[in-house]
Image (cartoon, one colour):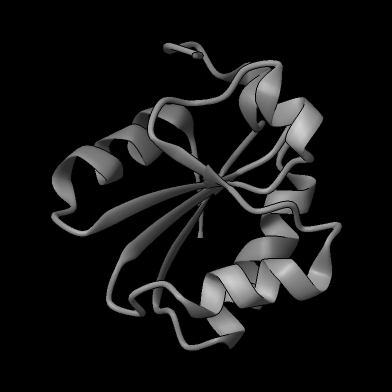
Length: 101
């Protein structure tokens, strides 16, 4: 499901078992990312699947990228792996108005 920043952040704050996944490259991640996010590069498909498969399927997963395109693809993959609560950040980190570390 696609969420705007406000609803995406609200979902993170209201979920007990919440994960934030940045699906950009390591270099993009190093340039700045949303606090407490994990970096699983969707372009490295094998490793991406391996890392996602280690996660708790009951978790609420919040996914973002630069603009929202890669993260939307990642959400579909994650849902296909048995996760039911998966949320894409509309506009990605490019439109993020909150803290970046």
